[in-house]
Length: 344
Image (cartoon, rainbow, N blue to C red; front, side):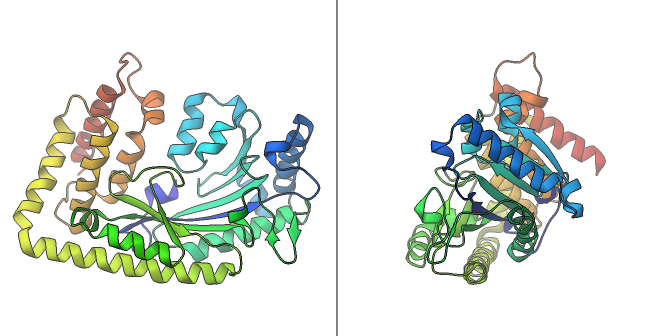
């Protein structure tokens, strides 16, 4: 899982970059109106276009039918940000192709016939787009897309018309959040066509001071223009967060250190921890690593903790004899932190 196991550009604030392209096939109803024959046809067509490609990319992907996966395994895909909550919701009709590095996924029969997605560590939107463009060309060479000269790529939701592209950046902004600067920033972003969402994208709440910013406009702007605008916004936000951190360190370093070490102690010794508390503590601990106050662990450990503390992963890898997820979470997190201490 590259975005979890690696640190990319601006990695002390930016967790990951994601590019998503929405595509539909010509002369086939949108997923909401398809019958079983159409659904199966889309799944098989997309799979053959990738698996049968002459490109080396064809060997990089594994195919998963969502209906054949357990609820927990579907949830794990969402928690890794490889699949959307909607793909899980429509699991009876959907499938997914995931590359072995878990950087790219191709969701089939979600809201649109095809949703290509690439998620990379740090700020790497351009690299993500280049990778997806290649896959997009491979599929389009065999399956004609629904396209209009004036409207661009035709999508199930009108807000995705045009390029069909959503570019998003996942950022950790604890100081801007705690100092009350996020409210004004959110209002400014909305005015320039940038939307802010939570941990799992559209419809999700902000947790652990993690914000996803993405373009609202897909029609009337090129992919390059969208990425360029988002890059400017991202760098400005990163700069503001870093400046706010410097002020916090200069103004009351001892109190910040105390908060970080208390978070570490709680996560190390707690016997029960709900998800909201876990994400708040993890945000504080992440800030400690990002500012150099906490040296016992690194960002990769923080990212692993964030994934392992989520419900699907706990049900898959936690103690099956314990029924309470909050107890399992506290146990798993404590073990991970202790094992990291021993390694260091």
